[in-house]
Length: 256
Image (tube, rainbow, N blue to C red):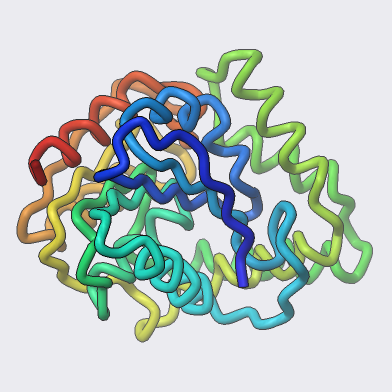
């Protein structure tokens, strides 16, 4: 099971569950979470095999979906706005399209995707295989991922957060994380249509998940809208905190 940490509680009638990227951990929200503290209970999730959570050797990305479902259901009857970034956004949309808990009130999907193109998944698998075999080293992997997350726009604070986050990841965990991400390319792991009100927040020039992925997510939601940020950053939860907060508040407000 994942490790989740609660904070805030200024409004006991609202909760926010924050689900991170892969490879990564809940530090993807370390600039955002404190600013939500006065508005409800903030639940920071470290998915299994990530952050402070125990190792998990299953490579099925749907395990993350099941874990997030359990966390949200455990907060009932408090309504939950589920915020996911990158892989976390996929997991959030996937959850909403399958069997969402009754208290799932809204989604904010940041730099997300409904599924992965096979050529991109192959690149992730090759990276994982080379890392596992010692043909490449962790610093080279992180350098490539960092270049994708912040091609030109990344504050020193955001870069420091990501550097610290990836620095905590072992080679073994990194290999498994890359395989899990590649797993969402399977046809039976794609997010489908969902009814939960949602905002898909996406950078226009995101180099990791192109804008068309955000467009697709917004189209899958019957009550979803797309908001575009003029940026090339991928981890908007670290570079565009105000925009993320505005999206979260707008979804939460719609439920009141």
